[in-house]
Image (cartoon, rainbow over the protein chains, first blue to last red):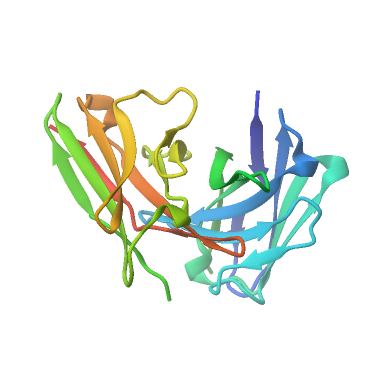
Length: 124
Length: 110
């Protein structure tokens, strides 16, 4: 059974930092592209960041570029999101999600597995 | 900046058919954007419904179908049931690892 379990959320003051983790099991994490997606209270889903299987390719949404850092440890089947200079507008549930890219000859691009999310609240 | 558009809300009667759409602020949606659809109920993680425009994810009932209608991607629910009452999000893949979510459609079944 596939499981993605996020942790590390909590209350942090504006300007502070937080590190989220996502523990993966039930699939081959080391060959999987992973993403972070967030959802502010009462709002829609927003893509945050992308990391390829080998960490060679990383992308960020403009809203977090320069403040957030995505990383992974394939030996530990874990995905991370280091969030610095946090703002009130970063308050959200953060989901980790596997991104399925298909194959070279049969590409596909969608989120196939999702975690349950961890809540980050930025407030003084 | 690319904006993916969805109807904010929609309602359907039980047993009825509803089509939700997913467009672009400028331009047309095609299969090249690999449209995908996700269902989310309050307090729950999203659930993958449709990918690659019209392929149902494992375990998704066949009353859910995806297509391209005109210049938009579409999600059609045929024979809506009470537990289809959810938020529905489309995602378009822009390339270079970037996915853009639509604002979501709140579907009411009544």
